[in-house]
Length: 359
Image (cartoon, rainbow, N blue to C red; front, side):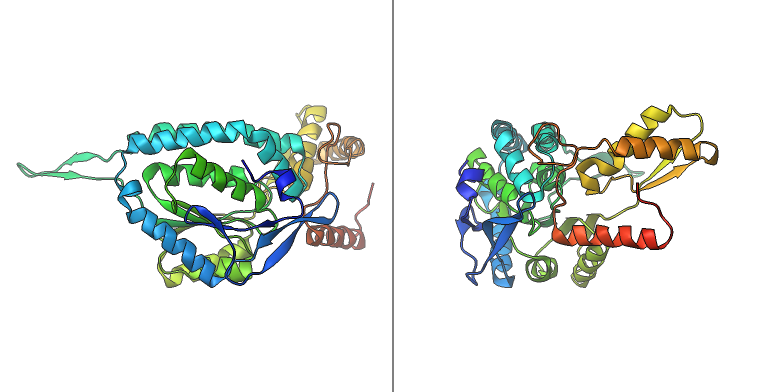
């Protein structure tokens, strides 16, 4: 795999279209910052509408090309299985790429990468089992049947907090049934997705089956979600962005599958084991510095144990180690974005103004 930490340092990353890394039409590249150091560590290509059009055209050609369209489900499964092997072989490097991009703990990223091969293997086995049904009808010598078919070109927009894990859950089944895809990773974490594209070609997938167009949401994402040749959109991210994607997609009557922001509560009752409950709450909200769609961002505590629980929670929180995400004893690394830090500082200031106490 050529897309490694050492190979990326200080270099430019191109778009991945039709099986090749290509320069953006505009020639524009944007710095990507390592949140641990605050320094730019590579540049990604800023794709525009013409780049998106090239990628979608490539995916559309690949979808209709007999080299992909007419291969057996078993053959697609073998390609996915080979991809699973390659991801396993390069798991350590993929984890390093994600930690450098988003600042999350290396051990968390390593755990995510170790789970990815299982997902590709699972859908590799499912590829030849996506079968239709024969349905009896109330007429002689007649029957109904259903057949499962690929949709076409699927547009995927992925987040920065767990890029490959959240991509894999939709990419693997899309490829298993025979779709082609255009992926726009977050502009804050593009490296691992481009590395995966390299592995996809190594696995033997035909050119154009998977394409990656990097860039920001306002230009690249907007162009992708307005393109008339996309059959479905998959998005993980904020509710506001989801609304904009849904609005663009609606103009072309294109369905969307989305996982949007939420407020997941912890609920603590009086009969709990206080120590275990505190550890669960701390893990739920402070893991990944709270930068997770499943973070336990609220906590409801039964009144009879409230004071005892808060005291124990504060004591446990004060033991958290903030440090470098690649060090083994670090509990929390940096926030991924300067904007995130400013938002959180604003929340703290607002809470203090409303009477909250900082421990």
